[in-house]
Image 1: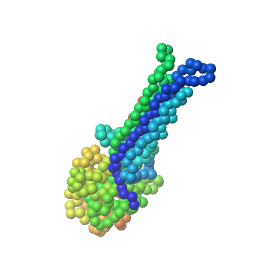
Image 2: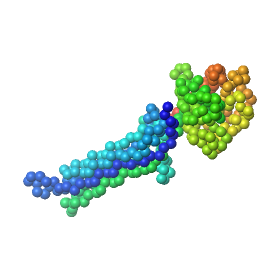
Image 3: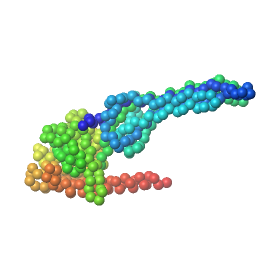
Image 4: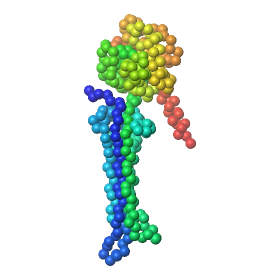
Length: 341
């Protein structure tokens, strides 16, 4: 299995434009042909394109420098040099791009096929034919091609999922994902079994689907870099709903829930404001399916499940779908309103 790489630094260099040409038309019986030096071609651009077939930035650990072609120089007979070919770098959807030197956010590619220009090719220089005037009919002026942009950029992947499964190590996130989807995350009874996020497509009846993400265990102090939380907390930034998983064999259910909420809020207030529910896992250990008492006034539901025994899953998935449908409908309405003149 390939390692999950979600942050890389690379050097991108757009092509330099070709230089203009100094040339004079020379034909039989045309003694005063005049200047005919063509312009140089444009240098190639560097672009990033979202590719849904990719799930990691692993390829950019093997090669870290990418350069587009330069433009060809202008030629006589008013021939413009050929422009340099653009170079297109495929990245997973959800990749954020920053300029490392300036810290500027260059943009992000979210949808499959979406393209972002990250380094612009240099303009081609003018040939001497461009500088002809009524008083300067035999110019020897020309321009050097403009240099292309060169940048050190950071690529950071933030997974795109509808539902983010959040919990402490061994809360049952991977087990739940493996049961409700076709994903096959690593499952074991020791902490931090999951060392990278896993995505799974959940298929309901009537062709209804949504994507769930299993986020590595979050412990107290995760937003400060403890455990694995800081590395992967950003992967739930794009989720629409959070499901806080609490194992029924935990020592203090309320403390677990409050701690998870606190870590998420410390990382991002916007993330903490997303709709969420509470899911008690491993209920087969109690031999009953009634959710324990917990104070979670902001949650849209409290559910009790046993992923191993396949109990309580229908009610959980139905509630997640209803809330997700509300969010999607509201987003579509906002988009339609924004499109109105």
